[in-house]
Amino acid sequence: MEIAGRSSVLVNTAGWQSVVSSWVVTAAQTKSKKTLAKPNIRNVVVVDGVRTPFLLSGTSYKDLMPHDVARAALLGLLHRTSVPKEVVDYIIFGTVIQEVKTSNVAREAALGAGFSDKTPAHTVTMACISANQAMTTGVGLIASGQCDVVVAGGVELMSDVPIRHSRKMRKMLLDLNKAKTLGQRLSLLSKFRLNFLSPELPAVAEFSTSETMGHSADRLAAAFAVSRTEQDEYALRSHSLAKKAQDEGLLSDVVPFKVPGKDTVTKDNGIRPSSLEQMAKLKPAFIKPYGTVTAANSSFLTDGASAMLIMAEEKALAMGYKPKAYLRDFVYVSQDPKDQLLLGPTYATPKVLEKAGLTLNDVDAFEFHEAFSGQILANFKAMDSDWFAQNYMGRKTKVGLPPLEKFNTWGGSLSLGHPFGATGCRLVMAAANRLRKEGGQYGLVAACAAGGQGHAMIVEAYPK
Image (cartoon, rainbow, N blue to C red):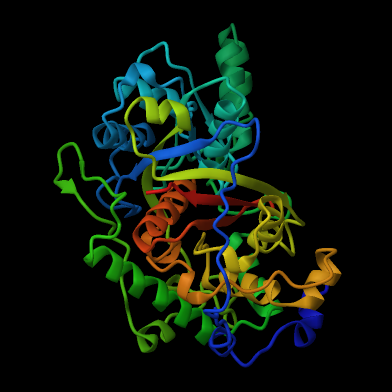
């Protein structure tokens, strides 16, 4: 890929804020008020969704296991919706770095939350879009008539990740377990070397390229000429908007969690508005000394869980619920994991809009996953480039820019936190709650993920 070499053609380097100033939504544009219901396909609705507070890893959740946090989200959902446990047909959770003792964390959390042992549950993994996959799997089960009521969610506990023995040590231990005589055991032990004790640590890195995601973000920012200042400004925006939303009580999906042996946690603890001067003092985190990605303009390692109640519309209405939103069209995309690792939103957005018969101007609320400031701003520049659309996407014209006044206005992953397996549900609930509060009709959720993958979905507000 030649983005770096062509960046002068590709982007306007005058700064993303100058680009933003041109994102004007004129009053003359008429809003489409059609519904996206499809003939002969069941309408799928979100009744409600919740999440535990998202916490910096190593804080209040550090002594728990992932299923403990997932159970808290499920109990919060049960309390919020009062849905009878026996009505739930299926439970699906997303997670990324799995705890080996609870590899099917959805099942363990469901049993812990008091769901019937007759309710099936499975766990999915698709990097940062694992909860998105959990939701859309649930949509498929309902739309196809297999289920009426599904609980989808996700969990991640970065405070305690599996650290393995080296492969040589694992092989020796397994062989020792099979050895039948003392002689066989001594023979195996004689082959032991000290370097066998070197542990294998999990890395937020691409298996196919061995490159960390932060390194990829730094290269992407450089390719699209996104400056360090632009990235810090965007991160400050995210934290400031999240703090405002938190103070105004807009983050209504957060449910309190009484941590065993500790206090009740009531809010996200990673929201920390700083100043551009303080942020500028931080050193590059990945490419040193010239990189532009720092701890301040990256999402942080986060613990947390989310859960949402998804139903067939007729089932929800028969049970007396007033749904929050319809889950409509969605797409998954995949690109080159080396040079286009984090460009999923750019590729997925036009596809999902075309599938739904909408334009960018029809969307009232954008909720994009913020892995890094540089990733968001690189996507903006790619979406605003005819050259990129023609050379990389096979499209005649650019996707277009989301208006900033409609974009992640209650904060995003940079400030609220990003438990890998749980973020997808947070994005959808933020879109649904924003549409409800602001009177909009359509929300667009999009996210990038490891492996060069991405997801986008249209959320339609439920009529009042």
